[in-house]
Image 1 (cartoon, rainbow, N blue to C red):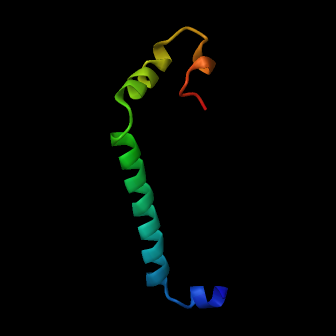
Image 2 (cartoon, rainbow, N blue to C red):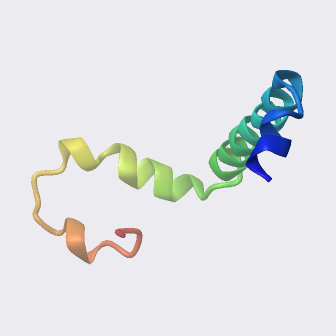
Length: 61
């Protein structure tokens, strides 16, 4: 099975890798531009915020 994949040619594997990377890039772009603006505004001010309430944020992971 692996030999079949490797025997498919470098062009085929490169094309598959390119399509995967383009899909990931498009996903990140969609996530960024469709995101909530208030969340980005809030997160952009985090480095300037001196309070320790970061764990209580609804957007924290």
